[in-house]
Length: 517
Figure 1 (tube, rainbow, N blue to C red):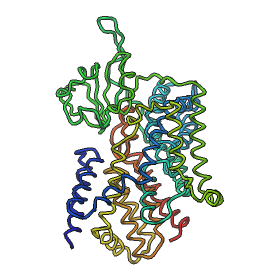
Figure 2 (tube, rainbow, N blue to C red):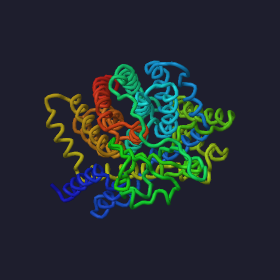
Figure 3 (cartoon, helix red, strand yellow):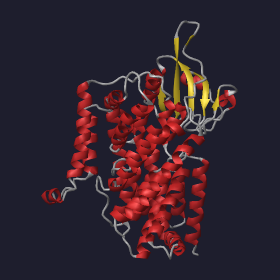
Figure 4 (spheres, one colour):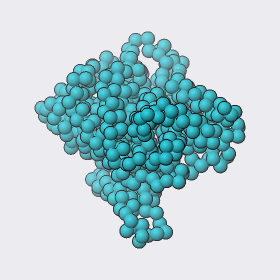
């Protein structure tokens, strides 16, 4: 073993431990590891910075802005109102209208804004029609994940893997190529939720915080649920050490931790973490003031958000459809021949869509930096460098040889299954993009040493890295619905683990059939 090999291996183990312990934001943890590799001479400055100029990473950044334009146009709010049945209904009938449609929407939009908009509206609607909101919120998060695996732009993970494939000198995914297996996983997953979610998910858990109340001056206070984001300044502090009322003019009445615990007494001694939900009493200025701040991932008081005019909604929808159709048609051979000097891919059309949305004020251009999740982008950029370090140090080849040695008698199909399990465990424990970063060089080395096509292994990484169903911490949308749905950790395990197994079985059966080794 060389110095580089041992150094990279120890650094990766430390990185995983730090991610699991949640010591810092994932982007900073990965960046710290990349800097260590630079200092040790394992990465050159050029290799360290390549990920920051990668087309896949920039595409993810622009898609954040497109999603924000759609969100601020009010299109999603109007869609969910049309989908939800009014009057007397059942859980099954409501899910039948809701889940497939949300999966379709999330195939083309970032999952987080879809859940941020839909979750409070669904909770408010469920209370109005006297159905338990707990039967809808976890399925809402899951179908956004299932929809996301069906297209290239459905999740940042697909774009990350696509960028790594291009960097490795292979042809990347087309717009709907992942849908060849993703759509079967999505259909099976939705059917599973139809059949079992009512039985496996808990009945409504009533909120214990006080209702709206009048203060002495007669000013009306409202019950607001606030999910803490990564930039909340009181992260990892006790509530008594962070004066929430002084900072935000609202009083905390209840804390729902991301582990499923709820506290209504002795709140001052509770340590706050990202993903925790605070139930606060606030006046009418609280949500308008902090609604666009990255301090909170979600703010809701049960009221439907204001929507823009009909023309603005239709224009935003037109731009989204134009972007998708343009990127799809641009991949056709006849179009490539007609425009040999211009690559009419997703990057091309998402760039145009973003600029049009900015100049037509679909999102405030002066505030555009607020709508980009910089931690995700830094995580993605560093993921490319970490993958390169694994190759440079020989770690990827060594681990690949070890895995192949375990499966000498079974062939590439078992290796495909092992790669899925490894990637999926990483994505449940750390983050989906970091999981893809660790798995990609293994896929490349395994396929090279066995002399088979790497494409099936790349597709498996996309499916496994997105399939975060068994824990609330693996995916941000799970954290969001956990807080406002009052779910416990085991609620995700109970309903999510079978969904992980379904995704695994369909992947290892269909992927070798569709993409030959």
